[in-house]
Length: 395
Ligand code: AMP
Image 1: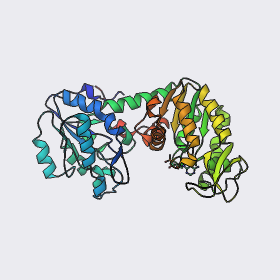
Image 2: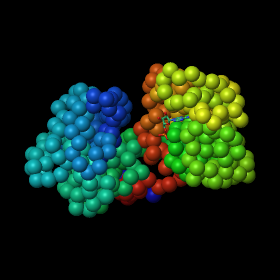
Image 3: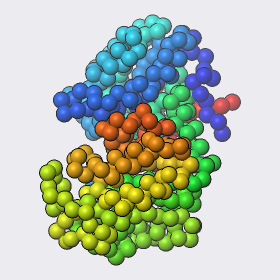
Image 4: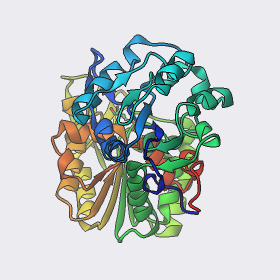
């Protein structure tokens, strides 16, 4: 069933309640270090305002867990949006309540309000119906452009749709279209590159990709659970003991499906995960018991780049090593460079992969960067995203 889109709505003199994903990265001083997510919502924001509506924006920021956390207020986001949009954005002190309702009722055509962090209320993540009704009372129609939270069943993504006509914004549509493309008709060879710290976050997507990909390259901390499952020594490297059995099963299933799972065959190891440590490259059976592997080694880079060069479709989520420390960033850099130079349709998802691309100045050279890490993984797992399922159907 096709979902209602923002372009299907009559917006003239309407008050639009819009869920955006302004969960931006903040630096240590609480300043916005990456405003990609704000920029990504601009086309829908501009379209709604051009059509003669007023706009009430809402988003979460960080994980305040139902309490007001000063450094997670939306003030700096409102400021940045104002600059990017070139018009006034009024930030309110809350997202529900009589004061908010009164101010919103006075809105004029073309006016933009940004509500306070929705996660300052515990009811948001519990999808509390009363809280959702309070949010919904602020608009005549609802537009969801927050692909990054589409995998969450929260009041501002799902709850509000019980009370208002609910349409997808342009960003939401674009994300779904791109991911749908690689899920349903990827041009082979399709190569997935998975890394990062946690196997448990990626088991689901791995199972789904087995029947779609020719190669799956596994690097980063998650690789060591797979290497352990193959009986290889992993020293003090990251290991999820309770996932070893599942890793074994995935490798067995891959054999049956003709999918090659490529694991690191050499590693950059150190005694501690710290800058300036003495490092060594060791072979696949050579991680000493008092060392941990913090990056893929040169032979693995060669192996992975060879596979990337053959690919026509590539999905990447998760760094190949502890890339935040320059000593362990070589593997991730090499993969990022290979992707930047690839002719394939490349889709990258996940905050850390994007941070790596940014650090390496390669962000503009990648085909498509998804604003949703978890959401893109769940979509590729074949799961229905609750934020999308809850939107109104097209009549
Ligand atoms: P994730 O959130 O699961 O994508 O994990 C990202 C994190 O994994 C980054 O902060 C990396 O520093 C970390 N990481 C990647 N490879 C390793 C490794 N070999 N050992 C420890 N941490 C790693």
